[in-house]
Each structure stands twice: as structure tokens, then as C-alpha cells.
Amino acid sequence: MARFYMKNWMEWVNSEELKKQINGRGVYAWDDTQLKELSAFLSEKGIKLEGIIGGREELINKENYIIIAHNYRDSQIMSLLADNKLRENIDFTYIGAYTELRCISGYYSDSRGNEIVAEGTVENVSILLEGYNNRLYIGKDTEFGDGCIIKLKGSARVSFGRNIYMKNGNMFFRNSESIFQGDSYLAGNYFISNFEGYMNIGTGMQVTDGLYICVVENTRLTIGEGLLVAKDVKILSGGAHSLFDLDLKENINIKENVHVTIGNHVWLGMDSKIIYNTDIGDNSVVGAGSIVKGVYPSHCLMAGSIAKVLRTNVDWEREDYMTFPEYEELRRKRMEK
Image (cartoon, rainbow, N blue to C red; front, side, top):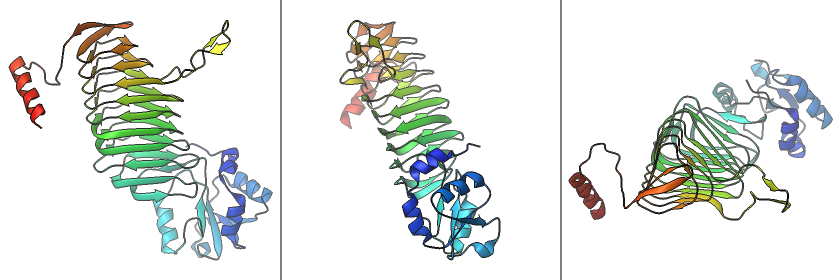
């Protein structure tokens, strides 16, 4: 079980606002979780902690102010407080290094400006909110598998469109914007992070397990519709670390317009790596094990390290053993839509 550390809690809590909420009432901790640290912090701010609730329901009333020092929101505690007509951030407050939500339905907000909107009930996921002003949207019929972790670490804007299924994996976002358009499937063991960058993934993405995406500061990742991703693919939007030219006395990883752009209907082969400052055109195929960096046209087959265009004027489909007449008929029907 993760602990919260007082330096983080003190960064987040507005002690003057807390005193206004307390308004002269007796202050009680819910239980003895982090009781020593909590008591020391309140004492430093001139707030006396009377004791703990500890199951004494007679103390759960509007004459007392309750502080719950848990890292996750317990539905039984919330129901008990609601039954006693206590209101969050008026009669009680949750504190901790982060808030963990294991189930979300409809709308959620907290005193740190974090907001979540879910078009349905979302379960089997651990949503961790750190810091301030995170925004999370989860569209209708979007589901997460057991062991999926979504961590928003401050000023993150994340949107999952409708009809997405994501199995077990880890996602981390901070001071960034990340958009998953919808109608997509991600198998497990993925790692997706966006720290201070921009990411927009189009509809219809299909991913085998092991996908790794890293979007870093001042970079952009843009992916079109219908991306097919084989096992253990890596996409890096930037250098992630500083690289210095000692003669020029400059960081050569600081550049403008650092990005990865992948077009519509692209197939990324197993264990391929897409490196920053790369553009891949529509309807193209990346061979297994390739390292891709540069500009590649539409309708091409590329492979190698660094990848080279091996063939142009190609196309591909998800179905195996499709004849060319079947392909032409499928293409005609698409054109008619």
C-alpha cells in the first residue's frame, strides 16, 4: 500500500481554507492512518486534533469536522457520511499524496480542481489523481481490464473516446493533452506516457501486447485512423534526455517541431521502433524489427535499421489470404461510403 508523504500533502492543502471549513468545530481523524504526521501538520497550523472517529458513529455529525487520510475513496465510508448528511469539503475532507478511484460513474470532482466525466460506469481500473487541475473523460462503452492503471500527475487532459477496450497496462500523464479517439483495442502489458507533450490517436487502433509510447516535453505524436500494431512496438516522440555537443556548447536535443506523425491505415511490424522526427504516410507498412526515423511516403513498404523504402505503390488489409479481386471489391465499397 502506497503511503502519502507530508511534504506532498502540505503542498496541496490550503490551511486557511481548511480553517474556514472547520469553523471552530472539533476536528477528528477518521482512523489512525498517518495519525502522527497528520497531528503534527495540524498542530503547526494551529489546528487541534481532538482524536479519531474509530467507529464511534455518535461523532459523525455536523458538530465535528472529519479528516480522512486515505489514499483511496472507500465507498462504505462515503455512504456512511452521506447517510449522516455530511458534505465533502464542508463537513469532511479526504487528504493524501493522491486520490485513488477504483470505480467511477458519471461525474467526480475534488477540492484540488480535478474532474472526471464518465459516460457510463467504469470498473476494473485504478485512477490515481495527483496534484491539481487534472481532467479525464471516459466515453460510453469504454472498458479497462484488471490491472489497468491511469495516473494523472497534475494539469493533465486525457480523453478516451467511445468503445475502447484496454487490457492491463500503465498510463502516466502530466501537464499534457492526450486524446484517444475511440473504437480501439489494446491488448495488455502496454506502457503509455505523456509528460508535457501532445498526443492524438485516431479511431480504429488495434494493438497486440507490449506497446510502448513515450511522449515528452514540447513534442507531438499524431496517429491517423486504423493503425495496426504488432507485438513489442515502441514509439518515441522525442529524445527524453539532454544530449550536449561540447564543441557547440548546446543541447542538441532541444529543437523545434519535434514530432512523430503516422498516417491513416498504417501497419507497424513486430518489435519495430518509431523514433522522433518521423513522418509515415498513409497505407504504409513497417517491417518487423525496423528502426524508423525520417520521412516516408504513402503506400510504401519500409524495413531495416535505419529503415529504407523497399517498395512503393503498396497497400495492405487485416484479412489474411485475400485475393486481389477481393481487395478491389473491398476498396470500392469503402469509396462508396
